[in-house]
Length: 383
Image: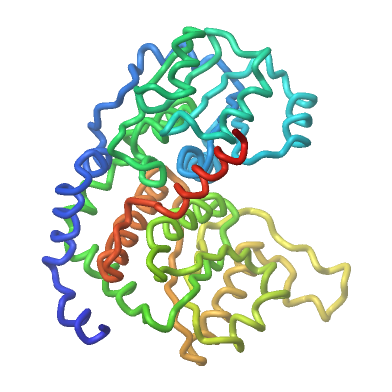
C-alpha cells in the first residue's frame, strides 16, 4: 500500500479529489467559496445582531465548527456566545441563573430537525422563546423543528440537504453564527480558492498524510500547545471519527492538551505501543506575559523574564526532538496568525485530507450508518 501511494502522489492527484467532491458533493464544493449564496438574507439577519448574548443549541457538526471559530477569534468578538451541545441539567440551571436569558438570542440548529438532545435542551427555555429572539436551522421538510418554527412564526433557515453536519461549517450552519459574531463569512473563505488551485501545496499535504501506515496506525493524537485551537480539534475529532470509522477501519482521534499532558500521558506516548501518529499544534505568536522567577532564587534564573509562549515552544521543541530520535511519526502544524484566513484554511485542509484518507481506506466519508442505528433504537426505547 505504501509503495503504491508513493507512485500515485503527484500534482494531478489533488485535482482528482476536488473533482470527486464536485461530482459527489457539489454543494460542499460550492460552500468553499467566498461568493457562496446562503439560504438566509443578510439584511433580515441584521435585526438579530442587536443581541449581545447568543445561545446556540445543537449537537455535533451543527455546533462544533462555530465553537471553533468563536474560540479562535474571540479576541475580535464583542459578544457572548453560549453553546449547549450535551444533556446536562445542572449546566442549564446554571445558565438560567447566571445569564439574562430573556435578552438572549436563541439559534437552534439540527440538519434533520429531529435531534432529540437539541429538542430537549430547547424545551428547557420554552418560556423565553419569542418571534423576535429565535432562529431555527433545519432541513425544509416535515420535521419537529421545522413544524415548531412554522407554528410559532420563528425565523427559519433551510439547511442544505446535500451537506452533512460535520461538513457544514462553510454553509449557513457555520457562517450565519459567524456573521452574528461580527465576522464576515467571506473573510473565513478568502484564501480557500487559492488553496484549491494550488495543486503543489495540496500535494505536499497529501504526501505528509500518505506517510501514515494505515495498517499499523490506530490512533491519532492531537498534541495541542495552542488553547485557542482546542474546540477546532474537537471539530476535527468528529470529522475524522464519523468519516473514517467504518468497516473495521479508521483511527481514534484523541485531543491531548500540552504541556499539561507531558506530566500524565507523555511516558505512554513516547515509550508505549507504536500504533499512533502525532499531530503537534504550536504557535510562534508572541505574547507580552513574562515570568518573574527571582523570588525562587538562582536555581530558577533560567525561567526569569522568559515569555510564556517561549517556554511552551521550548517544551514542544524538546518533544519534537525526542519523537525524531525514537522515529515516532508526527506532523507539525504551526499557527502564526490568529485571524479569519487561518481558521478557514484549517477547516478546508482537514476536510480535504479526511476525504483523501477515505479514498485510501476505500470507504464512504459522507455517511454514518452505525450512528443512525443508535438514533433509531433510542427513539424506540422512548416510545
